[in-house]
Image 1 (cartoon, rainbow, N blue to C red):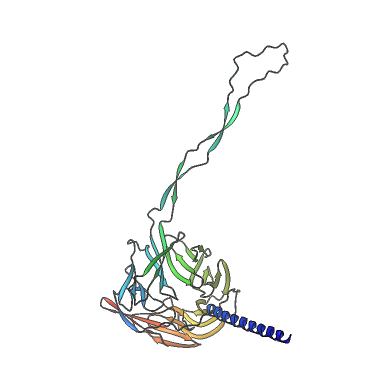
Image 2: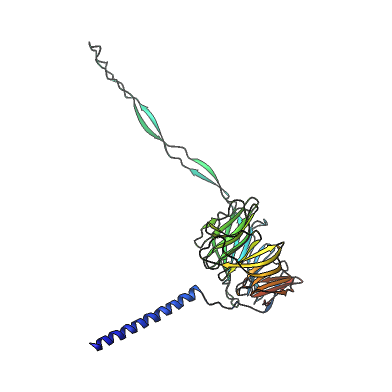
Length: 420
């Protein structure tokens, strides 16, 4: 009896140990998926000569080996390691409202998203409409008898007379032609996947969808992407309206803006897809969080601006007279409440006019830069880096500096790590 009891206890203990080991293994795997280990951002040190000097809207790819830019209305992608253009997308006409509207590299892979507009060849269509059949009532006369009415001596005797019958009759309605007015502009979303820069494989240019709701002649002011939730947000302006649009992975398009609302800057959560905007309606300026159509006020301070979001932190800057004087943070949560507490992590003075660019680096550093100076705030400390190119750009992870210098009919691109 004792021997059997001992065997049962041993097997019970073994079973518990196996279950605990399996649970620990699965828990570790889940934790790696939910909170992946941070990897060091990619940095390169190289020089490359790009043909042409009129390069605008220059953007560095995730792996720092490709460059996207506009040149005379044409989108070009340049392989920095092989010194050659590997992709071009020209405008379909001389109309400046057509062609590539905007583009952006994804932050975690060498994929470029871009919007392309062209003229709708059939903005007006004609449709034949067949109305429902109409019903009319028609009297049908019953033939009169050829015999004479019977004579009677009784004047009160009732004489039956035939009454015409009313019979419903279907009358076919005539078809008519109606004119239908469509969008005079076709706006399409593409994704361009680039191979390893050492390979000879051609880029994969994929059509994603047509944005039917895109206003004709609209200009995309800003585009942000949340790769974890596959949500894309863009602000579109034309002569009469300003729209905030959301595109999800199912290709659904929604308009999230309020009537009369102007949006200066926006950023999307890299965890939950929540959108944060600098919203201005009349004299009211607020930092707003949008979860679908639900809105929460993050800050009512008219001097506050959204700076960016990275690794669970929302960064808000206080700007006075074109000077950034304070950086504040609050947690990026799955469910936000209005007016959360804001923690001040830095105070000082950084020029902050319309010409500066801002980003939150992979290591939590705040980078504010123009073409002359980069200001870097890390762990509450400010450092300055003087830039020496004619034009200077920093990668979205804050790790790489690219300096462009014009040399005759070409442009020299120098890449190096951005160190404080």
